[in-house]
Length: 226
Image (cartoon, rainbow, N blue to C red; front, side):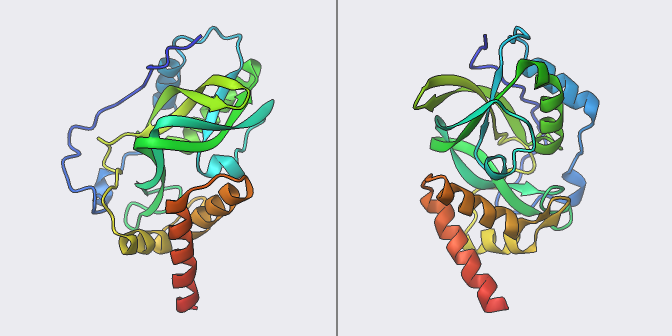
């Protein structure tokens, strides 16, 4: 049904900067529905229109999917790991004061949840998902093998676009905490986003030592500020 290498990757050639620093406000470019439609069409070029689709969630999709699904399974992908590696300039921050949100960066593996979407609901569901997850071109949608206890399914996965101006890497713990504490966007506080994701992973029995350490440090720092 799918080519597992399929990806829609708009390269930003101007993203030649240190990914340790937030990008300038003017670097943020909001994408419209025409761009979303083209990206979805490219991503679904091998879909037959009849089979249900799977979507892999590794951050807020785990605890707030906001779409109907037929079933959900715990799943693991290989080659990418969950990280706070995206400067959020609309969902959990602003272009002037960005927060940090999760992306899938290269290396390692990631456990999350995979959701099966009915074929008949796929077009509307994916458009809403693109509006939420792809306000800019920060992610590259790919079809990856999602390993579940009931077998491998081809899942739609939003991986980090390292060429995007929003890519963040090499941040110290203090830089991460500062960005998370200051971020607030259209979906609320970045602090809530990080802590709720950590809580959701714990509740689902999904270990993530990096995130657990960040959440503990964040809670401690918030307590000291109160």
